[in-house]
Length: 75
Image (tube, rainbow, N blue to C red):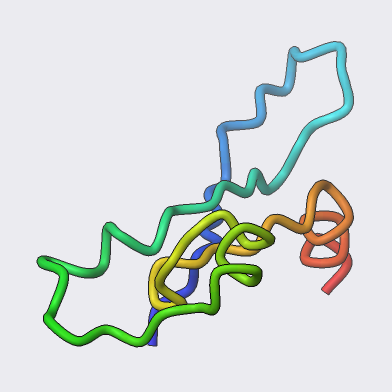
């Protein structure tokens, strides 16, 4: 299974006056992992589709804001 959150470690210079950021996180959308849209994909109800912003659950990507990234840093 893929993860929608990826991490990378930037170079930390010994001469940088700011505190270093050791790990940076970014998210990737789920459509990157689906080569084509297969037929008969399950669909949300109209109300759920409007609430989630997408019709198909397979393409849903939750947005948890900075709190989720902060929790991942603490792990």
